[in-house]
Image (tube, rainbow, N blue to C red; front, side):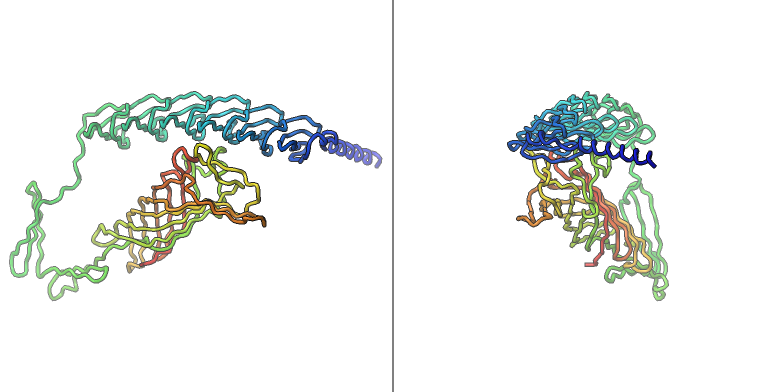
Length: 516
């Protein structure tokens, strides 16, 4: 029993003195106007309107000379702001990034992106600037490589800042099996993983490779090339179908007619109709074809006009993905993280036009006009802003937020190929459609609702926020009767190029078809 009491007393004394050691000493506290404990034994202090960070024993981590010092992050770093310029300190007191940059992003995979005079670069955790601030845009690193944009041209750098593919291309597509399509001076070619041009950019277009060869357009001529860009002596395929050049109807007898179809090569096709005539009747959306005389109902075939499914009301959820189709944003763009459950979209599709492509009316093209509202609810307490170069940036909210969202409004025009599988009537069809969709932004604003009673409680800031004026993407729809599901993926980024994060909008939802 005595041993247990002694052990308990020792543990109490250790806890007591440890706690006491973490409490700021009175003589240290007296040196500052105010102090706040932000971590155990770590204090934010204020003097003459300037902020710093100290330990409880008075050891200085960040000198008290900054306008703002953010909280300690998970990697042991403090971001600081001084005279409008950002930098980074380590908890050891070491300056990692001097406060000379317009913006500093948090560390991700050991690297922090910085912005200076409108150009981007990177620092490592040791405080070494491995990528100089000379790029208009740097995409996220993937397998130790990152796409970069300089003077409007694209290239690649490695994690040490070496430019492994020079910035001299208008576009570099994704690498596939060690090679990527490139665009240079308006011409298409291919490079390998190290930037060597395996097919010189000299073609107007190159189709997909199959069995080691591809069609290419060279100075207006179609040619075959191999995977090294060398021309192949192969014939180009002919059209699979030639239109007949003439059609002639002749009468053989009282109850016999013959249709003669002759093509330009002299080949003839005869269609003989016996015992009567052909009657085509149209009623509403249906077309009835009857063959025969008195017993014509015995040969009755039913056709109908095609009518697609687009008009109606839509509701769904929207989000955005990175260039490699991930919903996990890189650390540099983490302030744009969304509350997916609140980020919704709804639309009214008011007009529709249908073009049938087969006699049965089961296949056709659908287009129309709709208006769509997209709500992007941010999960972080930030306020969207623009920096001096017009790039989308943010400020941390100084008041608690109840709602913070970017709202966009677009006029949409789809062009879809629709396939219908009728059951017993048109309105009971299963249907599937896919194709493209384009949109024009007609409005955008940032809506902020504060979670306090201060005035103003609500704010609505109108502006483009660098959202693209026009967008284009792909849409799929499928359904039965009045209910259908839809999904969209936009190939154009949410923000203008080099004016915001590279994010591609996506949405899924439910549509109620209205036969207007």
